[in-house]
Length: 306
Image (cartoon, rainbow, N blue to C red; front, side):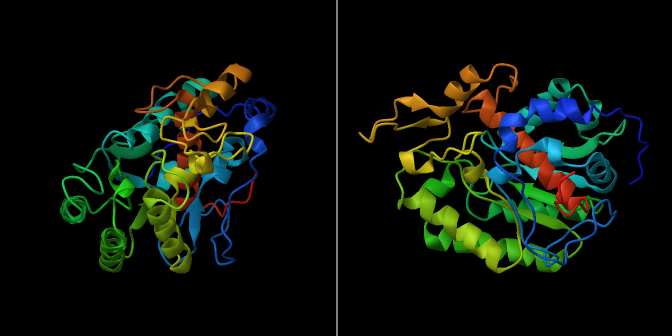
C-alpha cells in the first residue's frame, strides 16, 4: 500500500514539552537483537521478536516521525472490540488535534495519508459471545480481506472471571491463526483492571497471557499494565485499581481516590479530552500513545527512541 506523505511535523521542542511528565516512564523496546532496522519497510510478525507494549511505551515524542510514516505506509489493521477496546480509538481520535499534527490521524480506508485502521471490522470481542467466536470471525474476515496484515482484538470484562483453561484456549487459537497466516501480525491483549486485589483472577490470568507472550516471541498490547501507572510512574494495580482509575489509597479495601483525575488536575495542558468508555481522559490518552508505539513497531521501527 503506497500513500503520499504530505503532513507537517510539530517541532521536537514542542513535543518534548507536551510529554515531559510522560517521559519519566522511560522508553519501551524489544530485548531481541534480531529486530529490524529503524525506518525499514518490512513489517514485524510473530517470531521476529518479543514485543511488549506496556506503560513504558507511552512517550509518543520518542517515536521518530519516519516510524509513524512507515506504519501509515505499511499497515492495514483490522480491530475487533466492544466498549473497553474503544479506549484506544477514542484516544487516537483526538490525538492529532492535541499535537497539532495531522500525521496522527487514522481512517477506515487509509485515505489522505492516514493510518488504515478498520475499527470494529469484526463483531464481538475476545470473550463475546463466547470464548471462540472471535477466531471464527477472524478467519472469515481474512478470507475476504487478504490485504490486512495486522489483527488486534480486545477483551471486555471476561478475563475477570476466566479460568486458566479459558486463557489457554485463547492462546491456542491465536497460535493457530499465526501458523495459518504467517504474514499477518496478531496482537495479544490483557484484560482491563477491575478492582481485584493482587493474587485474584484478573492478575493471574493477565500474567498467564504475559508469560506466554514473553516465552513464545509474541506481540502484546498490555492493556492492564498501561492503566496500572500514572504518567509519573506511580503504580496502582496493587491498590485495587479498576478500569475507571479508582483505587484504594489508604488500604481500607475501599476505592476512594482516582489517580487519573488527580493527575489531570495537577497537570493542566498536558492531557486532552477524548471520552474513552468506562474511564478517564488520561487513560484514553495513554492507550493512544501506546497504540501508536505499537503501530510504529509493527511498521518496522526497532524501538530506539528518536
